[in-house]
Image (cartoon, rainbow, N blue to C red; front, side, top):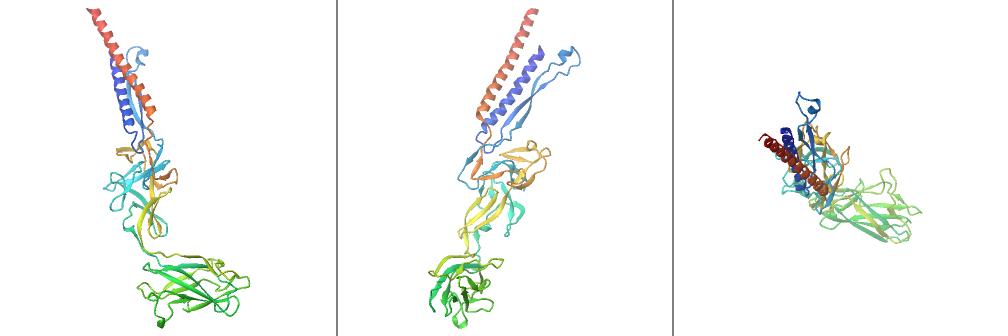
Length: 419
């Protein structure tokens, strides 16, 4: 009879722990990326070596065995913050504390601090792989957009005009096309190309010009020259079908500047592709002389306007000059055993011997999921399920307390028999 009292006590203790697990789950129903726990129980077998075999098989109650983390994915909430990230699949974000120790989290609520570091609400720095100027992925480092708040200018290297020159033009008739190109300081320089009809059908001459005070004085030579010979003008000819026959290759256009920028500014007039095939941008058809398209690859300096994160984890800085520059790729970590991770609180986990070593890579590689920008993963706790468990656990607790009460009543009857 005494044994039933102790069995009832083990039931009370075990169900009290189970209620604690349920309470923790319900308390974290709004916690970002929280993973609910499930209580498990184990029976306690008798260790007595004497007595009947049947009695030895009767247990001594129950014990709380474990609280198992449920790693199912929570639903996503859309936000207006471009640095809020959710992992659609397996993986953890990698963050580092002030001591440089790595920790791991599914809670992707990030922001930029005053120094440009991408951090958690607790100030832990998000880690990513550096992207160099050639687009290659480098070593893992803190994601920071600070010194890159200003994008330096880039001088024009390639430029093009899509121009049709009217084959019905008479000798001496001209047509001009103008577009802005950029010097090494980021100054926009209007470059005009003037095409003048020659005496022979299909023959034209092109000459360049830039504003006075920007290009050198005419007494020192032309401000715009063409080709390696630095000619003031070059011929342009078309065949009977209006297709370009000369030049037969791209042309170097040089601007001789006096505005303090690097000079000469040598640009490639892109008329042919890498295989020497004619683009068809410069034509001599019997229609109005017109510029239909123009392009160049230079740009002025710009200030940082926004930062975005793609589904592949690429962190891109957008500048006022229209440049979109990839800076980092967000690092994700995978583990052989998620259940072996050590819970650190604050939505953080730490690597342990039971979890195995972190496998670092990027979104979409291996078992790792993709990222959902402007989203947060919600808790995976199901309130309805937790309330059902709570009712069941409460009834089990009441039943075990009833066992203790009944055992007490039986013992009281035994005492009464003696009297």
